[in-house]
Structure formats: C-alpha cells, structure tokens
Image (cartoon, rainbow, N blue to C red):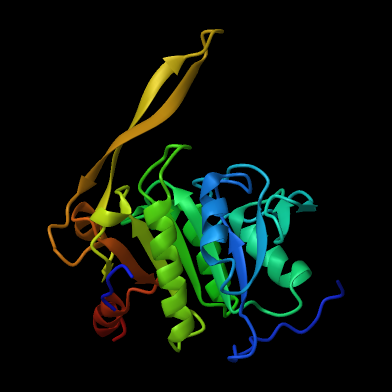
Length: 274
C-alpha cells in the first residue's frame, strides 16, 4: 500500500456496503468534541458516507482504554457540525464508541474513525492514546477502524495535509476487503501538504519516553509531581513509523488488541510444559 497524493436496542450486525448506499461512519476522538482535529476529520470525509459523531464533552488525552464504571454517563445531542448528527459524551473515548454502538446507531457502522489527534501517537504512544483506544474498541466490536494523529499539539495547527491523507486512507479502506478487526494507526507529519511524500506501511518502532517527575511545592507548601520526559528512539530500522514520519511520510501501522507474544509463548511452552 504505497500511494502518492492524489432508540430501542436492536441487533447490531455488520452490513456490507453496496454501490447504492453510503457507508455509515462513526467518528470520535479524545481531544473533545470542540477540538479542531475532529472538525477537520469530519470535513475531510463528510461526503463519503453518513457521518455520526459521538465524542467526549471535554479533553480525554492519555486515557488509554479506560471505561466509566463508577458513575453515570451523559449523552447530549449537539449541533457542532452542520448537517451532521452529533453527540457529546461525559465519558472516555472508549465509552463514546460503546454508547454509539449500543444506543445511537441502528446498526454497526461500516467504519469507525478516531481523531484527528493533536500530537503524535506513533511507537509506544499507542498504548496510552485515547484516540487509538477508541479505534481499538471499535475493532473489538467487529468494526474496521483507524486512528489519525497530526504531529502538532497547537490549537492552531495546519490540518491541510492531515485532511488530505485522512480522506485517502478512508477511501482505501472502503475499497479494500478489510478484516472486521482491522485497526490502523495513522500519523501525519506537521508539514505542508506539498512536502508530504505519501503513505508508508510501517511497523511500530521501539521508542519511548525517558520520563522524569519534577518535584515542586504548591502555594501551601505541599509537594506535588509533574511528569516530564524526552522521547528516545531505540529503533534504527527504516521500516518503522518513527523513521517514516522523520522522512515526511504518512505512517500507517496495522495494530491489534491481542497482546499475546506468540513467539515467546512457543518458547515458554517448550521449556515449561514438560
């Protein structure tokens, strides 16, 4: 895959898209329903299918795969996107997907899109990301999905390149016979569209943050800690998401929610099961 620019609960079954009907596309995020990223994602694909938005009512970055179990969830219809059915949810990104499938949609959507996130979700970030956890939750529900992230944390970030490639990825997904558990982690460099070289299929790099908790005192003299850190790439391969992004490619990494280390499992079985 190398391209260049160019109501009552019902039984939820996946429905094959035909040439006569538009796909139903669920859109969510972790930055909140008012974030510029989700607005740009909606704008990039709104003519491709029937769009339904269910997103957190406030920022939920770094929530990972958290769900709400100790308090009620609130779901409110909004008018954030002209002509688009949309709802804000008081819960996490994963809560949004669960509620959308169970209470908002009349059938499972054909795709779930999450993002566009403000900031990178490459390498180890995928573990902590609310953006990607929402996409993973959709795949658990047998809905092919993709999470999109732009490597720019600014509220005034230029989403033109991200919009272009988000649409391209969605079009490719709809043209491809995808497995029902498909999850794609898509990251876009913070570069002008004309400088982006296209899509590159990658593996997840072995890279992480060397973390440090800065100790400070509040105005009452009580200690608190603030997480800081520097990103370190320990993987020098040229087939990774980190390499692709550093070289102005849009990285696409297929990920999975089955965390079984199959190679190590075989090794342990041969030694442990006597």
